[in-house]
Length: 335
Image 1 (tube, rainbow, N blue to C red):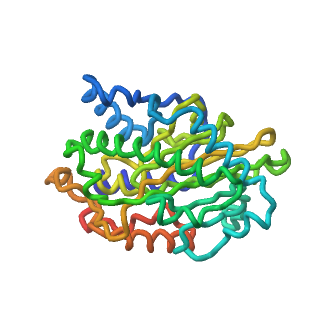
Image 2: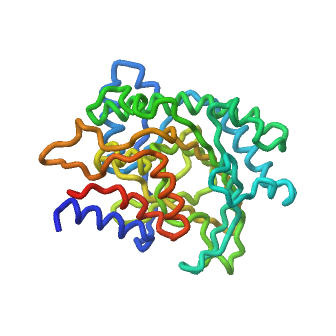
Image 3: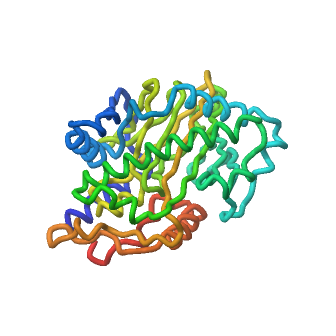
């Protein structure tokens, strides 16, 4: 087995959730204002270091107002406090629907209850989707548009910096994604009874099928990431966002940047909410390792594929309870 094959195997094993749990991890915090100043090249290097060694980092001074962040978190809480019949309007088994409500369920394989409730929907471009968003609470559509407009600017600035950090032209990822979309997930984690805590999780260990994910959290702990074989807590720092590498950036970077393995624990004292913004390609986009990152010492780990192919494989993996294997189909024969 080659060193690269060994690394791939180790990472896949870690994704199974069998790692030791620890805490106290302090991530790197990137000051986004510095990307506009004379220290840009240094900040770009820091972002590359964080993506390569941690798969995530936090950002501050990102341009999203505290009011904007509080509004979207408050709207998320309000939505999940609505009567059940109001929320269930958005339940569907159709993977092609642009808005879906996911409720808690029993994972029979791991024998745990997954408690998260999540409303996931397409947001960009707004005119294509806004009329399908919930009309209640009344502030939801306005708050979502304001937040997503701001977070889109953050996303664009970060994709440029990540492209540069890989030694590519700064518009490389943006050009490849051409007219790419945006989805968000409004997440609610209920309080768990103490006697059920051992067999209840917020979200199982997984990676995101995205380019990057931008996560806004409230101040309730529970978000854990895999770091050096241990599950570690990511603490809440006011007015910051968590940025993490998704599966598709792992492909583009030719496995230099690894998709973040993460999960969420719940507690028996406080409910928790978060809002995740997902950066996706358009359906006809071709994804593959950047040619500039391929040479004799670094062969292509993945073949080229369209996002439509990846999306179909993603849902097959969900059905087969094998989301940690969804990129296997796209591995190059030399990997």
